[in-house]
Length: 362
Image 1 (tube, one colour):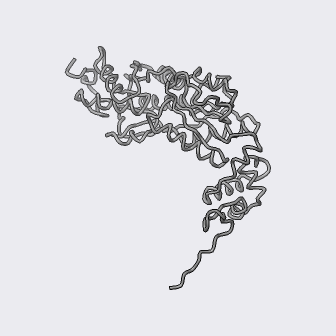
Image 2: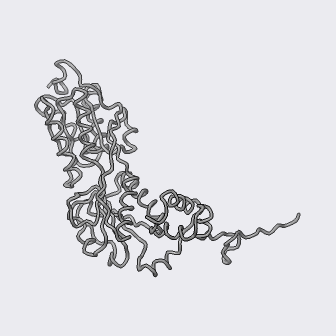
Image 3: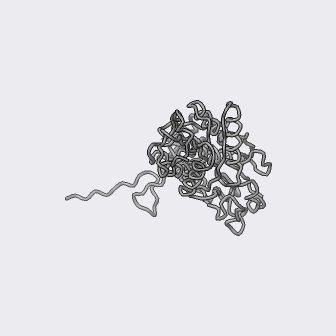
């Protein structure tokens, strides 16, 4: 048998026989552009100098070839660490994981890394995770944090992009939001269009801008519909908490609500359990809605009517805003649309005298 020695591909590293070291020339060749264009795109200096089509071709080629620029050399030239921090209140749902996925994708296109930091205090004051964030990071993105939670990181003087946070917070360098208010209005309108007039809002018991906004939008939307009775029942974010809050709402004195409008899919899952434990049915007796469109929303039966939040696109928009800031520009505030997803957990309210009765004939 004749032995054939593998021919090292062009650009192969001498220290790693047979393993190709992808260069900017390889990326340029694959994208059909010049090396100068590759440098401009991957250095985020391309706007006004390279077309959007060519910029996307460069990013795609770099991803497919596995190209990574020499970050150490670039950092020395630019005085940057090429690292961004993403601060989230917790990792209790996949929403923040999807935000991270989107942010990391755009960061990689710009030769940046992303450090994910779930704040130990939830939406409360977030400590500086490093001895000095300013010496370790180029910028910070914070998602769904309370207005005063980032004092320690703001004091580091780093660019700060706030996601799902108060757009009037002037200490943020830039803001990117989801149209949360419109999502809440869509849910309220969906329920009233079905004929519901007794609606209880299972409101997340969390002092943050995003949940306050949902409550205000629901109140405003239902106030515009004559004969609507809105009640509000606070709930922590959890299935058991949602179950308890729904049980309280469904067994409290007065006419029983025909719909439970929940601030989160997790609360809604607990609400569905409470309905069944009281001998009622979803949606025949009680309609239930969620918010977020988590994987959980299609794991329950019936599947949840909810509001879909474009989490990955949200993370991408936040990272693009940070890259724009680091490029010396100030991005305009951005708001991403959300979508009502109608599923089996909502239906018209039941008709007849039994509709006002409490479980057990109360």
